[in-house]
Image (cartoon, rainbow, N blue to C red; front, side, top):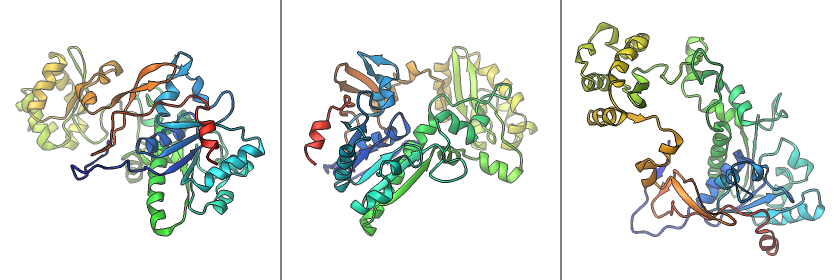
Length: 390
């Protein structure tokens, strides 16, 4: 789901998070994704990195002129400050930064910030208004909170892999690092909520985000289905567990996704594929019966879709108001006319590289520029600038 907020027209609007200062101790993906979301909304992100190597993801491919495309894709609009946190001088600098900052985000293992003397309890004495957000694999407490957490582990432990794939294949990781991204999004949501709450309370907050929690939170109806039936949801491929037809179907030149999710759409869909004869067949009369007889119905549908090109199927089904779409590969997705119209592919003018295309922001707010973003920082690019102001 994308978020679109409509504000009054003809009224120049400053960035929603303009003036919010964030100290960013995060690396790789979950934390950087969170702080990128905040940067996109105008927050001033000061990214603290270790000397020489910086964020781990600076070495991740694809590499262009020695710079990481991976790092660039989730670190736009930030400032990079190199500090050696093993030194007292660096810790003192962080504490000074905290005096004038609104938010601190970190994704170390639980207890790591406490060892540095930079935990929430210590820093809130310096700045009671500080919002301190931690992202970890399992959360700050609990029987396995100290275990290491990575995206694939969170997808496995949280149950997502068990319902991803087809019945005759092993449990499958979702094709993107969804646990990292989700925990980053929930962290940003928590931070913005705490910033709003602070306006009334005058106090900061401690935010604890778990990657496993984040996966569990988006299992849609899998949890409730298990709770109601006592049956463990299984892998069913691309079809929906309780709606039919709702799947991907083979066409003459690829695959098309079709979702006729209610009886009215079902009748219109059967008309569109010139099979009015099946509308009131007992075995397909209700959604429950269609789900029960899904294999038979899929064969009927694919007898039609396999005889037609995707373009023709889309034209026909859209005329009938049937939700449908091509199953695009990434090359087609990034060139899709709607994706381009919505500025979901943007260019950064990156030092050492030049122009590089990355995904844009899905949050569209009237008056907010969703096309032009500052580049990702070079390692230590802003160290002198930031420390000079302390």
